[in-house]
Length: 151
Image 1 (cartoon, one colour):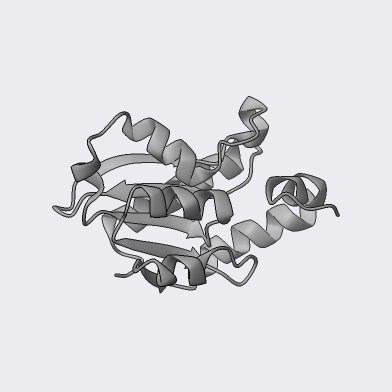
Image 2 (cartoon, one colour; image 1 turned 90 degrees about the vertical axis):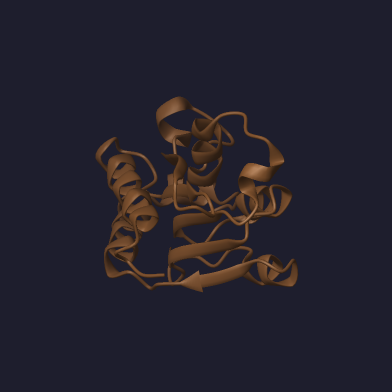
């Protein structure tokens, strides 16, 4: 797993898209065991006034309704460590692996993923970190709202 994987490139593209829209710059991409992109998306909480459209949830929504077997062996690529909600979605659908762009600005449910037998890989990608640092600096209220905390 590297920053050159098509799934990670798609997640990073989605993070950039979210940033360009004024939203939280987090992107995600779900890739099947066979290497096919099943869905991708970015955080849309600000753009859609949503309580739940984090990147991973947006990605799953864009993948559409799939049989449980479609998730077996799948990898969720995400530009930032997944929050508890997104961690739960990965556990629920039994993805095999979660590849994280960076976890310096936020650490989510990585230990829980591991405890449920899901492989976790952290790339510490500098662009993912820079996107998040810029957003947190410029829009701290929106960031804390996104992770369910008071500023």
